[in-house]
Length: 171
Image 1 (cartoon, rainbow, N blue to C red):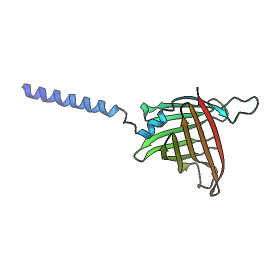
Image 2 (cartoon, one colour):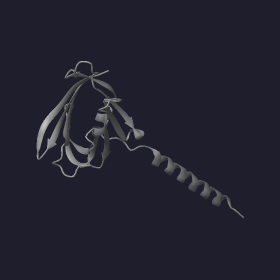
Image 3 (cartoon, helix red, strand yellow):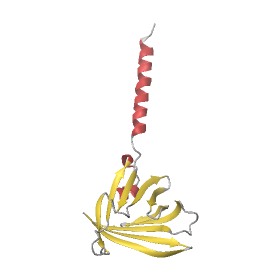
Image 4 (tube, one colour):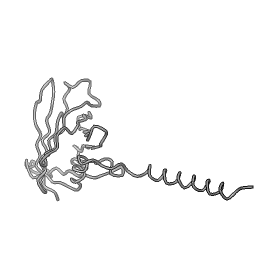
């Protein structure tokens, strides 16, 4: 014979399992650094340097994904030079993975974030035999209202070999 106490105990156990399961599905709280990336959500259009005659300006689209635990940035969506950046957060802070047209995937860590300037530095990379192979090595994003500047550094053979800088405006 089942007692009232046993029924209440089973009910309480089931309820606690449902509540525990529900809380596991909720996304982790974002840190301030990932929130700064999330704030870039939307479409940004290149204003300088001006694209060559007959070409459209580069667009960047920032979009949160995976329940807000990551931000995708698509560069040149739909073009022959489309690339993807994915920003995520771990116990050390924000990590950027750049899926490059060159076929490699350098990863950069956010090392500084102040006064609208976000600085990312190379950590490691996929599809790179060594750091000396050509790859994007650092990124500095400067945001002032609806204006953004991205300064990418190219690295090869132990040194920075050039910069790719874009100035953009939020659409």
